[in-house]
Length: 63
Image (cartoon, rainbow, N blue to C red):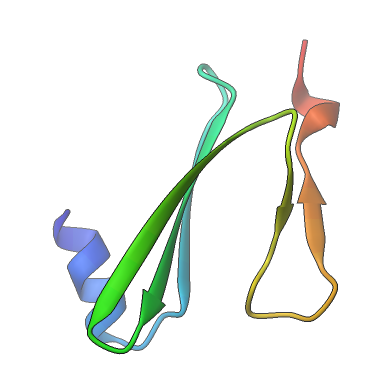
């Protein structure tokens, strides 16, 4: 979690971790002094909160 804290301190708004082997995506949203985390699968369409109306679809990467 060291990187997570460094990114938050640097002002990063979102931090994504993509695990192709597990077909999972973890998204950390930083808001002021707190953060929330969401877990998604490659079947989900994931909204990028730092941009309006931008979604990422990982379903193309499913075997």
